[in-house]
Length: 294
Image (cartoon, rainbow, N blue to C red; front, side, top):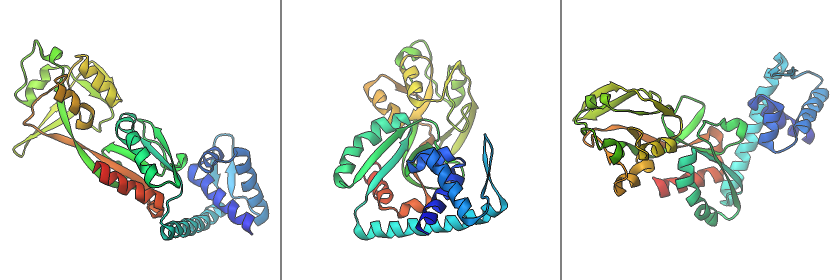
């Protein structure tokens, strides 16, 4: 019976991730072992749970109902583990964190040593990736997301807002008139940041009045640090979060444009899967981020 309980949990992870390899990565065991456990589970209960082919897996009709039962089992186990952790008040295990590379290097990595010194039974793994990772497949406990969240079955807690500042280098502006209104920006070369929800459209607000402009540029990239580097090289103008270019403006390496106008801020979120906030390691890390970055 204990073996079947273990195999039910493994089976639920296979369905959640959509593959044996995804479940293997999440659970940290060999893909061949995952496949064997699912086959033994099917043999023991006497029905086929999965349709297999070389490219994909799908649930059989019986497998669909069985999967729902397995989900309930996993939820009970996670809830019990969460209660134990909370009672002990000692977060344990490995906390797996993902973050955009630029923010993770400058803001998350410098905090990890202090965090682990406070919670000595924890380990941390920091995954830096500018792409949106699949938290379920990669086994991520907390993901740092910046900007605008898409609808999903994940939960999020806002850590802070970082104003976006429009700027350019003194070299780029040397032979140009400083813009006085958003309309003046049409004559300038934009560095297009493609990770924005509307990379070719900007809204500027002043005294409760909003002006929307369409922009164009010869260079585009999906990386915030690349945009910053291009700004410093005099390639054009762009709007970036204050945490990326605030120090450059203070030093005079970049010049803020249209400071009287506001652009929507880049919000910083800690994203987690619904059930995982019950885990002590997740809740204490999010509380730590709120204190240090909030």
